[in-house]
Structure formats: C-alpha cells, structure tokens
Image (cartoon, rainbow over all chains, first blue to last red; front, side):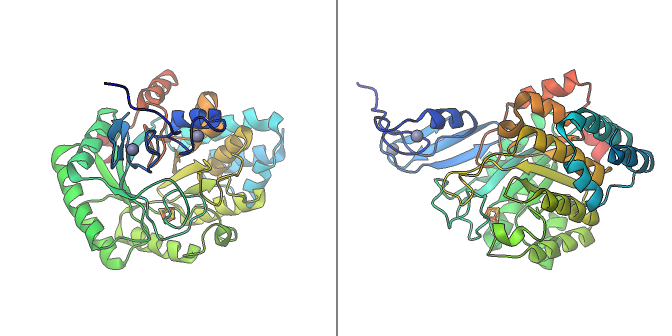
Length: 64
Length: 331
Ligand code: SF4
Ligand SMILES: [Zn+2]
Ligand SMILES: [Zn+2]
C-alpha cells in the first residue's frame, strides 16, 4: 500500500508545488487544517478546547 | 512621572473609581518609556480591587460557521469566502469538552454559536446540552448565542446559564465600519435584557479592527458605563477570506497599553485574555499582560483557531503565584 499523496496545502488549499506556503506552515501552528491535502475539498472542522477534528467527505477524519 | 499616572493612582487605585474616556485616551497616548510604570499601576489596581485569583475558562463552538451576519473580522460569517464550513457539535462531544475544560481547573465553560440569534433548534440543543453538562461536570455554564428575545433570556436563566456573553466588539462610532447587518444598539438591547434577568453580563470586543486610538478610548468608556461583570479582550487575528484578512496585527506595546487602560477604566471587572493574544503578544507579552491588569484567561483552543496548551498558561499562573479561582468562590 502506498501512502496517500499530499498534494494540496491544508491551510490555503493551493497546490503545494506552486507558490510558497511558509506563511501557511507558520499559521498552522495556531490553526487547524481547513482543506483536505489529498483532494483540496474544504473540510468540516470542529475545534474543542483540547484539540480538533477535520473531516473530508471523501478521505475521512484527521485529529490533532 | 506623567500626570495621568498620578491621577489614576489617586482615583483608581485608592478609590476604585475608573478613568473616564478622556483619561483612558491620555493613558493610550503614553510613550513606551512609561509603559512599565503603567503596567505596574494597572496590576496594583487589579490586585487591590480584584485580588490575585485568576478566573480560568474554556470555550467551545456548538454551532460553527454559516452565520448570516457580516462582522468583518469573523471567519464564521457565511457571507465571506472563508474556508470555515458550517458544523454542529453533538451533545456527547459537548459534555466531553466541558469535562476536559474542568480538568484544567477551569470554573467557566462557555457555549458559543455562530448565529444572529438562536432559533428553536439551537435553544433545544442548549437545553439538552446544559442539562447534560450540569449532571456530569462541576463547572459553571455560560453562553454566547447572539441577540436574544426576552423569552430566550428567560429560558437561558431557567436552564441555569449563569453568565451571558455578547460583545459590543468596538465603540459605537466605529461599529458601522465593521458590521452592516445589525447595529450596536441592537446588541446593547440584548445586554440590557441579560442584565435585568440576573445573569452576569460578559461584554468585550476586539482591538485592531481599524479603530483610532480615540475610538479605543471611546470603547473603554462605553464598556465602563455598561459595567459588565466580565470584559473579554480580543486582538484581531486576521482571518483569510474576511474583509479584515489583510490587516496588520496590533503592535505588542499598544496591546499592553490597551490592557492597562481598560483595567484603569474598569478596576473591578474580570478582564479576560481572549483571542489573538498569542500572535499579538507571544509568550513574553502574555506574561506582561497578566502583570498589567488581566485577571482571567481562556485556556486551550478558541472557536476556530488554536491557543497555547492549557498547561502553558497554568504553569505561568503558578510561577506568577496567581491562584486559579476555585469553583466554590464563584458559587
Ligand atoms: S454574529 Fe458572531 S458569528 Fe456571526 S459574523 Fe458576527 S461575530 Fe461572526
Ligand atoms: Zn498554503
Ligand atoms: Zn479529501
């Protein structure tokens, strides 16, 4: 089995091979992901005091 | 020593009478060189009139995103191209969030919804959620659900919600620059109903929306007139896709001056660090604010963004010898 391809920035949704995502990476320290890194769909994100869950309708859940 | 600091020492520290708008403006205009002395005075005022305890709170979003209002700072408005999607938290997860909040030693748990005001579905969720929390967790429940009708105010009281948050966000004169879908006065009328109901009034706002220093002073004066039990102070964290997404964050020294100024306007109020402190002040500034008038914190994450780990704040409070307010002290 191969690991799923991470193609998109999970903060801005743009392609990781295009543009600079350093500011996205920095911002992500204080933000949950918003876009699915595999398909760039906007995810449903629930933040709670101690963590977060992000759900892509196609690729499932990720947790903090 | 600047005259305003002497005046504040005599009036606010000695007598507990807050500065008026003009006094706050003088404080906000103090040069950086006077900042240490200003913060020390604000800290002395807090210790004298509020004591060393710090009130710790956790907040959670019961209904995220998809709001019909257009508050220009907010990533949860459905009117902007924000990446935040609408989502509801279920009751078991709400109770679990309250349990984890209580485990930090927090005495307050605030349930928030991104709405203009509650509809029946939200009130039903609140009734079920508050009941479930009160049965399972030792913590006070607060709520922030937008603008209320009198019947909704009465319902929240009956559920056992002890404090209601409704921020005026900014001063009256600047508000129309930030929100066009409702007025400052509409927000104010909800606050009046909350006050009359006996629930504690929690009302603050966000600094760095583009308001002038004069308008920041105006806001402090208007809050002082309202005299809320608690004032949460947020600093703008510019959110992608919102009209204020490209604004610069508040300068750290300006943020500290504002914290001290708001304390001098509101000597007896719970003044809480809320969103944006991490990017505006960082770790060092967080400490400075706690030694400059702040006496309450939101621990852990916010509604759509993340905060410092609760342990980082709790360790800092222990180091500063500031005890966390106990639940018994709030009942
Ligand atoms: S009413 Fe609240 S949730 Fe809705 S846009 Fe304004 S601040 Fe955001
Ligand atoms: Zn990016
Ligand atoms: Zn996906």
